[in-house]
Length: 341
Ligand code: DAH
Image 1 (tube, rainbow, N blue to C red):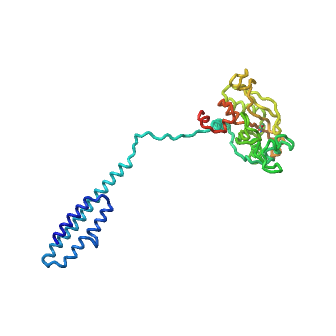
Image 2: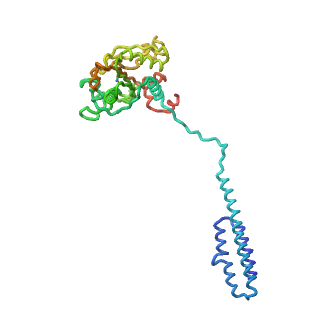
Image 3: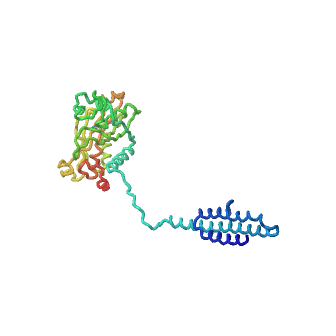
């Protein structure tokens, strides 16, 4: 029996020291120490020993059991240290490697111009308001004093949703004047930027969708000189001090009097060049004093209150500021174009 235990000792300790993973160690533990294991099998034979032999053999067997257990524990510690070492090596991060560059986008050039204009008007106490692009013909036309027969109401010019021409894609931001007057407390100082839609073929200066900025002031004692002073100030902030403007008489159904504002070409100083198409002047916006009929239609007494309004094209402004010669470039969103700004 002593020899049996000696050979078990040698075989087991050798196998344990050579075991390469945790699973194998567990298998060995069962093989040697388990209920059906080799040491247990030897102990079963103790019954055949004499009473004098038994204590010494029992002691040997206990010693062997604890030696095997210790050997397994020791090997386990070795293996897990090696495992950790390997894991650390495998997951090592080389911080000296150059990073992968992440392309970061930026604001569209037209929205830079819009933000600039918003800032200027916010600085003068205006609020920025937003409204529907799907609009009632009542707001887009009728309440703005644009009669049934007006050419801009034709199906060839405007996108309608209904056979009776009552719902449409707004053709201008001017209906925001009506929304503001119907819902806001007086006095009113707003700008309303947004998309507008017209049945135009796409070319270098036209698009069926483009952007306008509407502006309006309603208060007591507001006059045309307030309109001119405010717009002159805005133009100076955009195009620089001393920019010359001119106000030409025009006609819009919802303003009386109405005008268009031009700026003297900032490229040639008014002499005439390709930027101003030889004119010396560049048209910037339409404006005027809000028509008494429009005020009254929104429940505002034109004998007490007056106001001015303007509408300008945002694309045209951005094209002027960034010297963009084709409107399509603004909407195509080709990054080779956008990255230049
Ligand atoms: N809505 C006009 C257009 O699209 C522009 C305009 C002209 C707006 C005069 C105004 C204004 O507010 O007073 O052509």
